[in-house]
Image 1 (cartoon, one colour):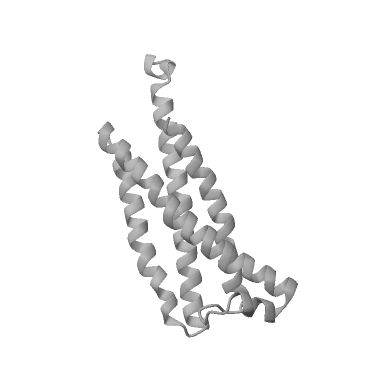
Image 2 (spheres, helix red, strand yellow; image 1 turned 30 degrees about the horizontal axis):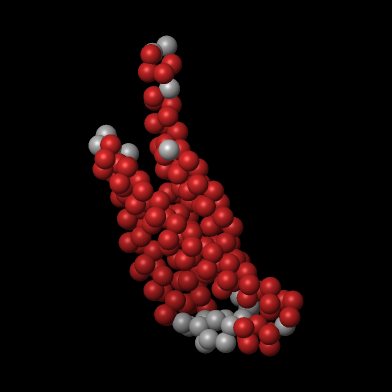
Length: 165
């Protein structure tokens, strides 16, 4: 057995890398899910404005991958800065903006109001023309799934932050 393995140094680095990969993969899943969701919505509801999220998701995915790539380098200061930048980026767009706002508010809350209080109440609460009342199962399911995906990504991001200490 090597002295490095006994000291725990390689294990700690492997744990950190595993946490980075899990948090990154969870964030990328949300970006992919929301891209599919919005592309489908643009097609089904003939609302091309929904495609904007695809043009936002792709660069954000590239930024997340790039930051986590730099975080894996042997340059401690650059790796630490990139890792924290990845944490902030993952928390801001995939988790908060897409998962909790888009998935939670725009879909979970809308569906709860629609199915519990009725269509009129849902239309009153979500009066903007950008909202569609539930009429397409795939659109609603992919929209709602953004919330549990964000909860999972939050857990993975928390594990990464804990491992970074």
